[in-house]
Image (tube, rainbow, N blue to C red):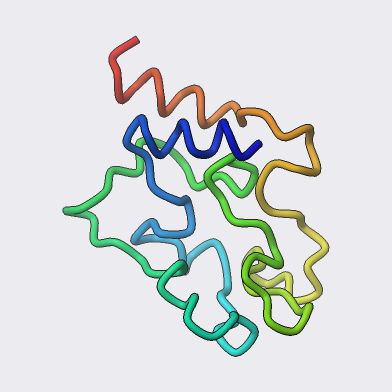
Amino acid sequence: MTAIHEMMHAAGFYHTQSRYDRDAYVDIYWENIMDGYAYAFDMYDSSYITNYNDYDLNSVMHYQTWAFSKNGLPTITAKNDPDATIYLGQPHVGGGFATSDIVKLNEMYNC
């Protein structure tokens, strides 16, 4: 999964949870994020990144629920899912591209 994720960065994509509309889809638990890593959850303005399609919790570009956790508690969960029953990112579904990732690549590069 790491290679695919990094390839998407090289292709010009940012983390899904950095989208300017992310707060409509996920909750960030700042108090659970490791010291010095809050920047990893920054949002970018719509003039900086392009969304291309709907917010996808399963995108290879989405952080997992416990990313950068300092205490084993969730750092990011789907909206209204504080118990983290909805998994985020790709490892739980095989670690490959989500359908939305392919759509984004095709749209960005006019394929």
